[in-house]
Image (cartoon, rainbow, N blue to C red; front, side, top):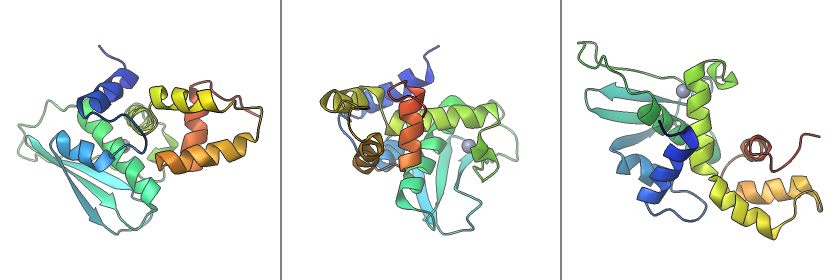
Length: 172
Ligand SMILES: [Zn+2]
């Protein structure tokens, strides 16, 4: 059983993605997901709507572009990691909401989807290359996180968490 990091890395490789920013919508389409945008209230980021073998990612287009990218990556994570076996039921729709509560990542599947999203948008391989050029800790770490966040088109908070989780920076 490949790890979440390995599954995200495989997807990047299959799509010949070698540099940031990762074209997350193109990857979604490459795995057969349709991506649709609609503005909605702020407590919903997106949804994965399954109907038999096809699936659609709905993205809250009222949110920041970086957040939308994370939402798409998160929903790809659900699609790949959480394959349902009950899609023969008549009520065939599976909806995974990511709202303000679940983004606290208390549920296991939410933690996994967020981990997948981070691995897809901020591949360890890419970060390692970028960090080789900049010695974090020697300069202004906040400034470097900001620079990387812009390059990877993620929020600086997402980048900070990723670097912390990878052990590339230490908590203050
Ligand atoms: Zn989710």
